[in-house]
Length: 460
Image (cartoon, rainbow, N blue to C red):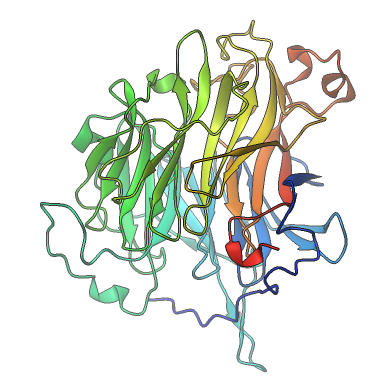
């Protein structure tokens, strides 16, 4: 069965007239704490551009948030929209900006299960009502579904032309007719396995392995697909460097481009993150080991669909960030990008229980293709973590935030970050806070309140 969507008009705000103050001046953020319980490690977040609702996955919980920008700061209305009957230990959520549909992929019983939000046609008006989590449609995994840890999902157009020298002339499957995007999901147990769906996630094809083809590590970051159907899967360790595994033929064959100048400690690193701007230029955010127990934020850039990447670009014009973690790359109009990350000004082994660094959530913006950057502390008066952050699995006490965070853009190009806050008590937030005070995991959204966004139409 092929699911066809009849979509309403996009939610719009007149360019340059946002009542929230975006468009000019210094960028600032407002933090909104989820009113619902549950830990929030490994957050993911998306925005449905047809409703402008934010979908926020906090480990085993899903929240829907609508922001009212007629007041400043914007008023947030929260709803709990957990998929009913889901059994999981490692979920991840993704919102397809072309269809407005949100996918929630989980692992259970040694396989991945996918749920997605389904639009419902109003019998009176004939318009599609995008329910944003009121109704979840489950799909059952096939025997070829990928492995069951560190899974993720992404979508984009099918590749027809491709760019690889050894390109195979592949036709788009017949069942894909009328479907906007190819869906990809990857997971790992040892190697990473990736599969593709051509019917909006109802069925999945046979798996391929990006890292077995390229001798990279099994843990990978989130899938990104560009406008011509090139699939990017970032890998924290391809030998001693970070790398991007790339498919130009709809996930069948994979090539590798290592990030020049990058240095990786393998399993101990966070996942890199990929984003593609409107000019189809590829941006990568990653933690770069530079010696002296320092892992600074770094960005790489490609103007040739990932065939080559730049040397490391620093998004920290202050030069004060000595440790970084949980990098997320965002891109909007041509030359506009932002790197989101946790940062600490203290050098040292950030995974050691003796580390005493103070972590904040940072967002660094570029509006000129990476020539200059503006670094913003999105949590200036409240650390997100004190002390160590463990990145090597298991039940270490320093792993309260787990392995990654999520960030996205809304319909006006604002940066919207869903993160886990490990420092929530008054003693932890106060000046005498200690790492022992910082073992929480509370879901919070940091939403851009002012400044230019990544969409130039809203400059003022």
